[in-house]
Image 1 (cartoon, protein in one colour):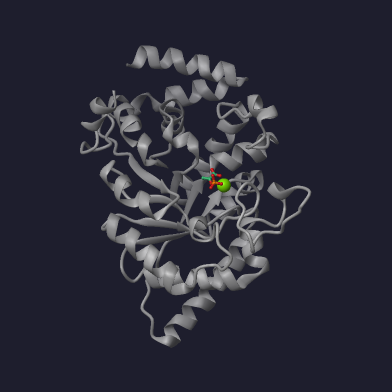
Image 2: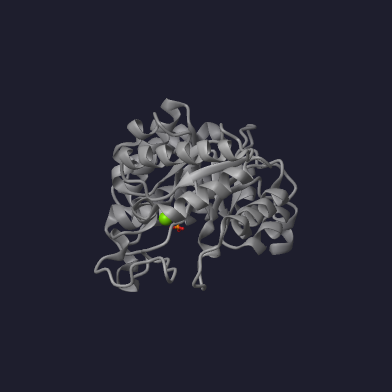
Length: 325
Ligand code: PEP
Ligand code: MG
């Protein structure tokens, strides 16, 4: 089966009626870049920069980061690389950075909150990301945004860092797209407001599901409640997609949902045209995209949004797929 999928690598991710879908890679390690490219990824939709901070005492300096970003850009040129600022805390622990004992780490001082609380690391990271942007198309992404004031703080800091680099004579792309991950319920409800001040949304369904359904993503006892097809999740995804389209900003999904063919069909139906995933899933999703007819989207979308439970959504999808393929 893997052999059969190989033929899809070099084929475009186009639907039967010619709509082109962008399939990108999520990268967790530097060494994943080349294989992801070979698997047909059209750029990086999510670079999890945590890898540089894990399993060591001292965080990487600006030069070390710059080298890593340069290397990834070189692998994907001319396609864009979306660099997410540090997203530690919760399920991602980096010694020396995270607070060791929070009662509720997923809702604690993690991710962008930690970055804005102790800004030294974020400043340094922004410097490296901006400097890398002089050498290829970089998109900057902030994780776990829960409201507009965080976006504004991030942007203000970015402006400061840009001014600093200008003074020092370092080149960078002053117009690099700046986006946020939509992975908290508040960001979903505020999507129309947030869309006015960012260039793109990328939905982090892993956390979005956890926070929307109040189900710890790493707790096996409640794993049965972790339902990507939950009608509340479909509504959240619809709301964010509609807000992005209305504002004319970029939109993608970089949570695990994007890389599962059954889920990716739902995302296509809800209006998503850019999916970022572990690159091993790209051929599988591409196969399905190429059999898909985007004209059937609106009918499927309405049908899916009428369902009342995750089981109903799944049943409905199976029926649709049986008749569509
Ligand atoms: C997500 O939350 O969906 C996501 C892509 O980010 P991470 O899994 O790194 O939290
Ligand atoms: Mg996340």
